[in-house]
Length: 244
Image (cartoon, rainbow, N blue to C red):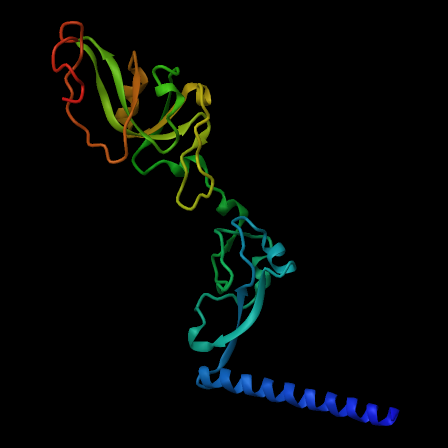
């Protein structure tokens, strides 16, 4: 009886092995047909989502990237042939699982660092002023907003510039494309009332010498309009509602 059970078990194992081999052969033939018997080449794929800044050695050692085969015609010309080339480098951007690892996805750590100067648009400079809560819209201005700047002139208070880009509040810069951290209102005198604008050099010079500066926060897509200076002589002239 015991020998019979052993024979049955051996036969079952053999049948299972044959079935597994048949399935493997079938799947390979299906893949070959799908690829039209194309020549396969090795590539490296992102196996698990990679966050910006992940060291290359971590990506390799913790199996964030794995090798695989694809038809040669689909292999990117910049695909890495040696995954060890990313050691000592970091991911330049977030990478999603399934992406083929190509040259440029991992860079030297210094190249992945964005300095504040790189945030200034070409032809412009950064200039900083300090305003209190009253003159700075109660500290509600955040990096990335636009403001109008009013300054005191001999003929009264008038707009110096409109739709000025706020580059930073305190030492918090405006978010860049791809940033996942949202800028929040800190409340109170955020950043000590320091406002940094990105403007052309002449505008920066004017802002630096302006007196009695007030900021007004404007909505997205605001259209600049000509506004006459306001002084004690015309303070009470005009409509009875500001929305007229």
